[in-house]
Structures are given as structure tokens and as C-alpha cells.
Image 1 (cartoon, rainbow, N blue to C red):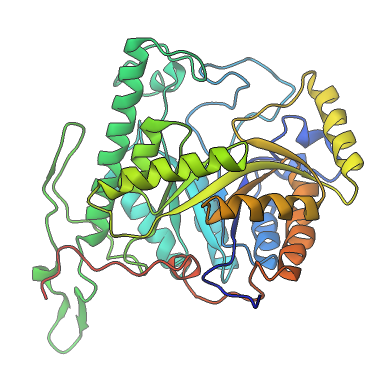
Image 2: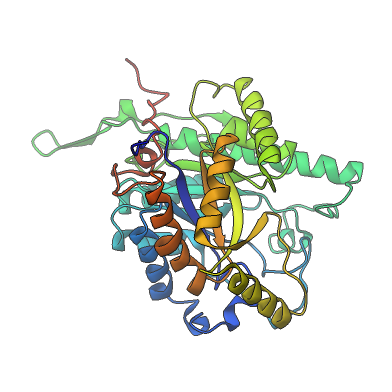
Length: 402
């Protein structure tokens, strides 16, 4: 079958510190002394671009990393501390030409007005390759940084109390409002609002700047933005979901959702649930990508990949687990799995390199050529914007008159 961009896999990588395994920073070549430098992030994203990946995501948070999902763990043997993901993206974007750059932003304790202009700015400095991954925070210690709200104890991954379940629903309802405000602010300047006429002395057409007048339970925002409409019109909005409440955020608010199935059957069920939910929203006619997340340990020999994982587990003092499926094997075996899950309805995958120094090049130089041999991945970048790479149209401005 000849290569067809419309049916090809889409690939992204999720970048976090030295890698997703907590002992990754101790591996040879991990560059642990460089984690807080611009050069480190520039090198990672350049490698991803050499592999012609669609985009990278950059992890972030409002508290120190922790092996506990809900509170700090006090550990000193794992990477702790991060640079700001949006600022990393803005620094690195001008050094790249094709790949999309998608920083994580925490909606729970930040303001949508500030975020809208930050991502609009990123879209300008990247010439149309920006996106965001919207995330909620249910951690009490992170709420304490701001002092504006209290959050009840939430034990993720277990049975929720009625109060915790209500709090989770509230956090995701707030995130949906957050995204709606951001999207309206991006549209608050029409595409031709800037006149820049030196003879008449008019820089903008004030009639083409619009108040958004958003009034909701969580935000009251008048607008307009102070940043003109981004080059993509609407930069890519993405979110991660593990169950029905975040699936509703994906269905109603995003262009792309990340999900964490552990087999093809589960992938099919998740896709069906999200697409059914999407059909009942105001965005029903708009395309939606659903990507599967996997943590990957890749080596040419499956035994070598398993041995590397075991050695890292020994350094960490416990077996590695994840919300996503953990794949250990060869690029060819991973290609088999990705194509099987694609047939279950996923349009792409976000791979989390267990050890970035090892597994990111294994993706770009091992997996990508394997997928190309199967006519399942691009040989060149076919569009100049992130929306274009994903086959998403540039949206019309909601406030523009015909």
C-alpha cells in the first residue's frame, strides 16, 4: 500500500526531565547537569524534529515531582524541579522549523487571559506550530502555594469519596471554562484587524477587536486580548484523560486527547466513548484526534530492553509502574503494536521515553524507519503548521462577520 498522509500514523513524544523512569537521570548520557539549560531542551526537540515527529509535549506542574499522586514524597534520589514549560517552548521554537511544540499548562491555579497571550505568542515565534496541554491540579500542597482555594483530599487511582468525586468534576468543569475563555480570546482579534497604514495613521481597525464578555461559574473575562489572532487561528488544544470525567473535557473542549489503554480492545472502547460524547457537543462537526500514550523501553534485542528496565528498577528501589502501558521490546515489536491499536481507532501515539538519552533516539532512528518501511509514516514534513501536520483546518473566527 503506498504511503498516504491521511492514513498514516501521527507520532509525538512527551518530554519530562531525563525520562519517565525515575532512575533515568542516573543513566550514562542522561546529562543530568544540563536539565535546567536551554541547550538541553533544544537538543531534545531537534532530535524529535530529525525524526519528523508531529510534535513534542513538555511536562510541567505547580509542585515538585512526586512518586505519590497527591502529595510530596520527600525523596531526594529522583529528579525534582522543572523549568517553566511555556518559557522552554518559546526559547526553543525559533531554533526549529517544522515540529509542533506543546507545553503543559495547569488551568487550576492560573488565569486564562495570561495563558491565551502566552500561547498566542508561542504561535507567532514558532510561525504556527504551537499548542497546549491543559492539565488540572487536585493536590492540596499546590493549592497552598496560592491560598485562594481549598481542595479536599483526593486519592487518585482508588475509590473516590462522594466529596472527592464532586471536587474532580468541578476541576474539569473549570478546565472546560478555561479553554473556552482562551479560545474566545484567540478569536477576539479578527485576522485583518491590523491595518498598519502609515498614510492614514491607523494601525488597527477597532471594529475588528471584540469583547468576549465571558460570564461563567469560574471566570468573568471581558477581553479583547492584547495579542492579535495567532497564525493558526486556534493553536492546538490537547488534554490527557483516564476516565469519563476527563474524557468529557477531551470531547467538548480539545482538538486532541491522550488516553492510556493497555490493549487494543480497551483502546476501541475508549475511542467509542469519547466519540459518542463528542457527537453530543457543540464541537461535533470538528475533527478530533485521539492518541494513545505509552512509556517505551526500546532496544534492538527485547532481552536487552527488559534487562535495562530491571536495572533501572533496581536503582529506583521498586518496579516501575505508570498510568500508561509500559512497552519493553524492539522498534519492530512496537510498530506491530501501534498499527494494531491504530486499527482500534487511535489516530496517533504520544510516546514517553523511559530514558530520553536512549529511548528518544531509539524512536527517531529505530521506530520511525521501521514505520516507513511499512508505509505508515511520513518521509518529509508536508505542512508548515501544527494543525496542518495533523490535517486540521484553520478555524474561522467566531466574531468575524461574513
